Image 1 (cartoon, rainbow, N blue to C red):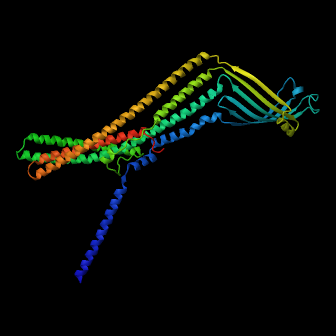
Image 2 (cartoon, rainbow, N blue to C red):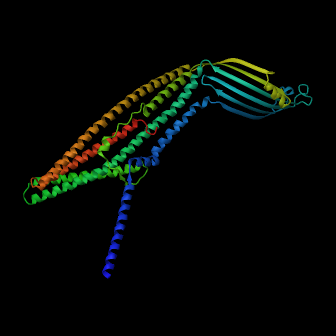
Image 3 (spheres, rainbow, N blue to C red):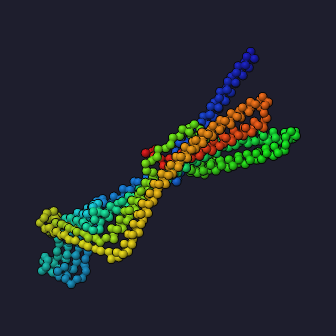
Length: 490
């Protein structure tokens, strides 16, 4: 009976341990899976945490939304003015004007400037006036005069020389709009460049980690070769030069792996800095790099006009508008104006207001005005400078388009060339692997030496490292091409 109980206890305890370790293993696997950071997740972290990227994003959106400010000068404006006047000044005609005047005035109106240069204003004025201290023979018997004035007025002014057909208005609007749009496109292009840098930073760390793994494998094989050479020299079946060569190779591999560790540390720091973290280590795992996935990367669709070219176009617009403004400001101002006012005046407010909306007491005015800048030679020199700036902006735009096209063509060719080299590097890896495995079979048959096998293993590891570097180069090129590609978010 005791033996049966012992067996049952052992069985239950074994089952408990199995479940316990299985659960622990499951949790560990789940944690490892959740601890893997993909490229898209990393880019989302960068977008949410990077101050530089957020600054460019805010500046880009803000400049675009603020571009409507260029239309503000041509929008209607409502104006209102109220004042209270107390006038007790001495004058030579106090018998007529009195010795004390109290006046309350309210003026309200709407102003509108049209794009073709016409300025309009519709206003309404209401005034209450009380004058005392005047001679009774001029005013009412008690020497005071109280009345209310009301006026509806329309004023029109049209320029026939400076700002003819609204050239100055349009140039001002174009200048303000182009300045903001140029800032928008510059920041948008800068945003793409920072995202490309973030992608390259991810690839840099991933490659650095894989490189360390391979370098450690190479170091291990170099150590085995060194041990093998040491034994052979000790047994006096090999020349000392073989040992020296093995030591040199081992030291070189140590140097390589130390350089790889330094690169991984630097890549990890850059990786965290981009996502606004000063922690020197990266705890997350990164997705491994697949050769086949890299070889199937499609060339991004080139934008018809990239953001840096659009910024150059807006700079040319802005410079052209500034040149036009300089030209307009140097021109004489010759304008025609006209106004019509309908007036009412009465002791009481209501009759005065009623008359101000009728044609019983109108006042019409029409005329011309002319002004001429005396220092026209200075404005002419300034205008010549603006013309040169405009020509410079046009040349810069042509150069930017040329540079943009050449950069895209160069990056595209480099991407295809890197793919070809990656294919060759992959074939070399397969060939080195096949050579190594065949040599291992020969060793098992006693037809070769351990040294030869270790050497072939090193050749295989070096081929893997070379392929890894080409992969990183290709991925960086693909990230840089996205800077000139169609924005996927649009």
